[in-house]
Image 1 (spheres, rainbow, N blue to C red):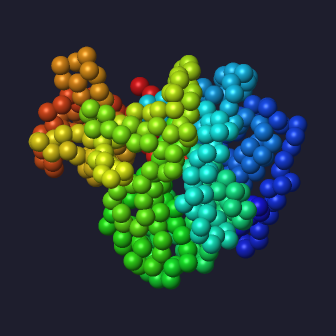
Image 2: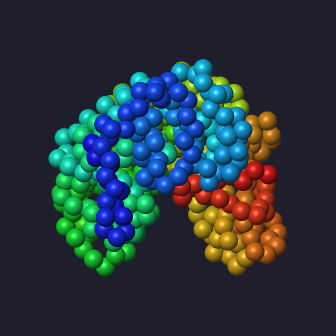
Image 3: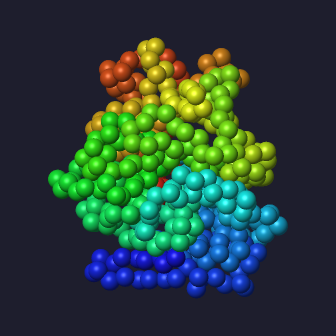
Length: 393
């Protein structure tokens, strides 16, 4: 496999994956923070191919960076794993997921069952490699397919359209899908495949994209702890679990996942065993072996008898003068009489009161009958994947 970085001046930096193997790294535990895509691609591939144990983390998340670097690689030396990843921290401090070689290889086998039959010659990646999606779909998939990996440090939408060629697989995100739709240019991409993950893509956007470019769009649903869970094609509304993944609903209607891709051990200020099963916070409907996602319990709030996504509340608040950024989630506490609370973080340029927030929401969508916990913070940071991080208060 060739790893190809396209520079803005048209030149290329080309590396052979076979030349990255370093036997001296075998079984060494390595800290690999987010750097340039080029540095991360080479460091992560070298570590994985050499049998090292890389700990991958986004150093833009300052609390995570401080914690990991204070602990050091030696803290995790005695744990048996092939790579460690961290959740985004959008609902609290990031959780570390230890991936065994078996977790990763069985996950890749499932991905190859779905993508191995396509005539793929090159994988084009817009995503960072430091997270599980970029690691699996952008680094390991081309390695397993023995095709070239091509990327730029910073893709503009028209750049991506230029590199979306016949028999190319584009590994990207909803942000780029939406950005491509805004281009005036139309191009026949019937022999190009797009993978989108890291966030929801509305059905109407998926249909508009596949219709405009006459292309194949495959969305992946997964998580750091679970790895790959399911996929759907074009503008489907139901997800098909990957081979080996078992899904069910608990008594509250939340999706439960069991698979060989799930980290058997998590790090949450101590080690937590999963037994290869994860109870998600995603409301879902099961039908004929497939499932439809309704929304996350921490991202759904009931207002005036209707369910609203917290993202909708964030958009309403961010449209208000003086609010630069908003992060909303629903906190559960079964010990309280009202077991749900709406927690709102605001990055503001002027004072905002809880009364003003309630008034704005009541005017737009109705009265919130749940307690509101309001925090005014200096900054709401985002990960490399664009997800908002929960501030520490």
